[in-house]
Amino acid sequence: MLPLEVGTRVLCRWRDNKYHPVKVIERRKLPGSGANDYEYYVHYTEFNRRLDEWVKLEQLDLDSVETVVDEKVEDKVTSLKMTRHQKRKIDETHVEGHEELDAASLREHEEFTKVKNIATIELGRYEIETWYFSPFPPEYNDCVKLYFCEFCLNFMKRKEQLQRHMRKCDLKHPPGDEIYRCGTLSMFEVDGKKNKVYGQNLCYLAKLFLDHKTLYYDVDLFLFYVLCECDDRGCHMVGYFSKEKHSEESYNLACILTLPPYQRKGYGKFLIAFSYELSKKEGKVGTPERPLSDLGLLSYRGYWTRVLLDILKKHKGNISIKELSDMTAIKAEDILTTLQTLELIQYRKGQHVICADPKVLDRHLKAAGRGGLDVDVSKLIWTPYKEQS
Ligand code: ACO
Ligand code: ZN
Image 1: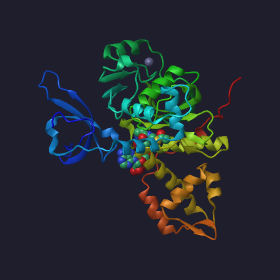
Image 2 (image 1 turned 45 degrees about the vertical axis):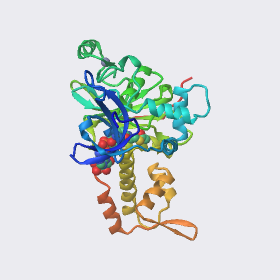
Image 3 (image 1 turned 135 degrees about the vertical axis):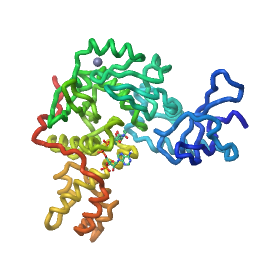
Image 4 (image 1 turned 180 degrees about the horizontal axis):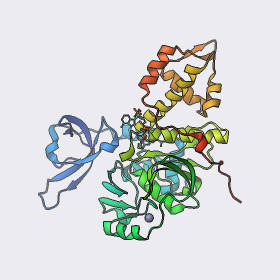
């Protein structure tokens, strides 16, 4: 039976000391060992891919090995998960010049991105464990750890290189305009066309924590909104979101990330709220690019619930989805699915009617978590993007 084949399903002992089903994604020989001594890169089928890891043979329960794997079904699922937009992105980066991405290239993409390459990064005062594969240039393939300059986001293989760089680098905040400042929080708008290298570095960094997003080499088409905590040493990146300069699909956000050391502190909801404030200034409704990750969906659900239910609580009399959309810049479909999930919508005489019992609203609001950090709109100094001729 040994070594196990890639694709094998088996039970594996996890950090909770319990056995969970896994699929073997990759295997590698242990250096200086016998012919059958391998370690295995496994995906826990019940968990998100950020928990994929290399495990030793001792962790696997060989009595539970299943060998029959239906790869075809899996391939279909993967391709369905990709939006048209993402297919286009992959298309542009991997098979230039083709309109549609065929199943083979999709599989190739999945193959290419399956095993985490960089295990940790150093960024400012944090050492951060990564979650997913990111397509760094080939010369970084043999690195387990990368050292980032926290200001220009250049990355290096060795600590000494970073130290040398820090003596020369004169940036103390993201390149671009500071469009928001409130206390120690600042937001910078970075144009991917004017700051190409920064935009690309940011994408490499972000991909380490984003799964079903393909890195866009064409950063020209995006604006990056970088959130920082500022002190006397400079502005330290907390997270960011990217936004297409022109979106046909009314996307007001492409990718969102809070760096792991800053997560669960309300910054994610701040970034989401910020993206809707920009949409309000543009006089448009917006929606995040799909698919959303598990954490992305939780954050958006929480944000939508809180914003919509706060209005419903205060509002006297009937209110329509259109009115809610005009007030919040949240796209009507997102309002509908949010209220439907909360069972606050009834369909009467061909129309959706919102039924909002105050007690029910309070219960949902409690369940939606904390509000997150507030955006003080009076501190936002911004005009919508205009192409410069
Ligand atoms: N476990 C359970 N619930 C969670 C978790 C978690 N690990 N993380 C966030 N949530 C939920 C909670 O409901 C939380 O609210 P609460 O803390 O009041 O209960 C809510 O999401 C948002 O919390 P925030 O602190 O405001 O958000 P955070 O700063 O952690 O950022 C984000 C959320 C951006 C999704 C972050 O988890 C992240 O960067 N993840 C990796 C990248 C990613 O998945 N991005 C979204 C992809 S989709 C897209 O880009 C369009
Ligand atoms: Zn630098």
